[in-house]
Image 1 (cartoon, rainbow, N blue to C red):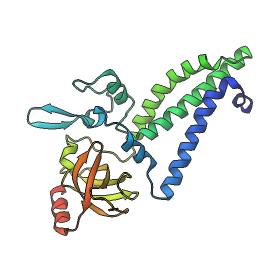
Image 2: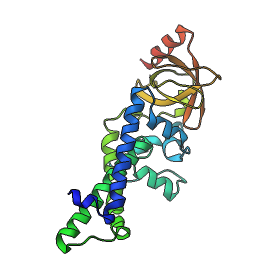
Image 3: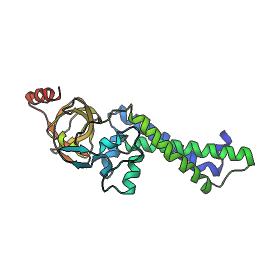
Length: 247
């Protein structure tokens, strides 16, 4: 197997696996320092319609992210969603952090390519040109990434599938669970909706020079894209009211 890794025809797949390992290492080091690399990456990405678009139905405010939680849904059926948005939904974008999906894709692509080249080499004693081998490897990696995403979405902390709009999170009390929230450097926080279900969101201070460490209790005051701006919760009565409404 080692000899396959040294061939130029397998270079794209070896590089993919090396990048995957580097990302995993950076995420692990980040966790030691309380920095959620996956959360930072998600906050830097454009705010696509797949996770956060609201679908207008009479007497109901349903978050389009609800549709992505259906276990046997092949692609989100969001009115006005383009092919690219539906493709992202098919890949479980919004249900699983983007960095996790990237790691899954790189792993599937690298392993698929190495397996393909190994089989071809065993049969014909030569390798496919790299530019040709990447095509079937890419085709195999996409569905593999989707199914990895589906599996991870069932075990990773995520928003539950009740009909809840993220807009309704404003005014809720949340607790920082990972990282330290600073301006431009969001941290992960959890809150509960009125169904009692837990949601994980990215938050950063609404006031310059403020910072909220892990375990801090904050009040969501507004939403900006995929993040929420927060201030310190200095009134215990708000916590009691929020807990009472969640219960």
